[in-house]
Every structure is written in structure tokens, then in C-alpha cells.
Image (cartoon, rainbow, N blue to C red; front, side):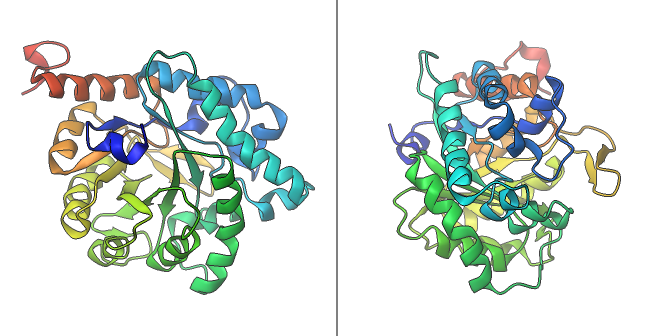
Length: 310
């Protein structure tokens, strides 16, 4: 079943943070390529990470291509032909990880923002000083290569501002693969400070976009964003926040308490969310809780007994 059609039947569970799962398995992701480095160095580790999320109950795996770009790999001496192979491999690894589950598994090919390639935290600020045309030229080649690999969707994710959203919406036209558009937000604004009403409205009439929403944000910001995305666009909503900790780009570490609670997902679903999961620092155990919450919601019963919901 195609992903868009599946969303009309039930909400689907997204995976969690790929990087934290790889780090938990002992992999060092400290360089500028982040998890994309393992596409070249240890692809089996990426496949295993995807498998862990599928086995936890995820329906959709998001590929390891978030920080995989032609420009970023070129800085590490990897030519365009090899970069194309690695981008296609990211889709293949996620597809293989979902084999033999006894149920349908989908793959979303990740396309992170321009700032992810810079690896300096600017993906959480936006406003790179580039035109929409320049950003479209940056994104289009990678999206073309990912689309050729046959994912079920393109995940245009962690988008910090409306200029980059405009560029991405242009760049996916004519590729023949549906996409979701997901902003990183602070409160009711994009990371660059634009109102979410304006940001979500850009995708309302985009035929290629099957879902709109937020990711890589504080879980507390997701509640209002989900309802707003549904109201503004009339499309299914995608939501996958971080654990609630804050990324310190200077120290390259996470700070603060964990706030992600699987009990939030019923509210997101009621507000229009159809793709629900986690982003940075949300692991397989939490995704299993999300899957249990959604399954229990389908049955109208709490996932672990009547005392768990109050």
C-alpha cells in the first residue's frame, strides 16, 4: 500500500533518533558528516539501527541521508558518483531493515536543511543569506538521487525557515515521489522567527506534499503546532519532536531534562497527526511506547491498564 493511502486507514509510527541509536551501539558521530559517515564506513550499523526501530513498532524508517549531500561529501574527498551511491544505499539499508517483519514497512528518504551540511548548528537558526533559487539548486540534485532509489516518501525535515521551505517545495516538483514538509520550531514560530500560519500555508496547495508538521523541536511546542498545521493545510500532520533536551552546538552535546512522553500522542492524533514518532534522543523504547499508545487508542483502552491515563 502506498504511504499516502495508508494514512487514511490509521496513524503510522515513525522511528526515533538515528544518531542516538548509533551512538548507543558505540559509534562515534563526532565529525561533520554525523551519521552519514557510516553509510561509507559501516552501513551494517545503520541497517541494524533501522531494524531496532522497526522491531520496536515503527512503521516508517527515515534514512541516514539527513546530512548526506554532494557538497558535504566532497569536502571529505568523496566524488559525486560515490555520493550518489551512498544516497541510494541509505534507502536500500532502510528497505532491507524492514524485510521479514510480517507487516508492511515504509521508507522515508531524509533531506535535511542546508544548515545540516554546514554542521555548525545553523539548521536551528535558518536565514543563511542564500536566495530561494540558490537553496533550490542545492537541494534538487540530492532529492533527484534519493527519488531514483524508490523511497515511499521524501522527508523534507528540520526546515528552519520559509525561504528553505519554498526552495524544497520547488525542488520536489516532478520527482514522482510524495513528500512531507516538517519544520523545526520554537513556540508558534519557525526557528527563524516566521509565524507557523505562514510557514504551513506554503504547503497547503502543494500536490506533492502528503503531510505537514514539525520535528526536532521541544515536545511542548508540538501540541499547538499539530492543531495549527491541520487547520491551515487540511492535510495529515507529521510530528516527531526531540526528547526535550536542548542541543548545545558549541559543546556538541545535549542539555536539560527529557520531556517526551508517549502519553502525548493521543492528543496529537486527535488534532490531526497521522505520522507520529520521535527525533533526536528518542530511542526504540520510547517508540515502542508510542506504538502501544496508538494501538491502545485504536482499541479505546489504556496501553498498560486503567491506572496509566489520568
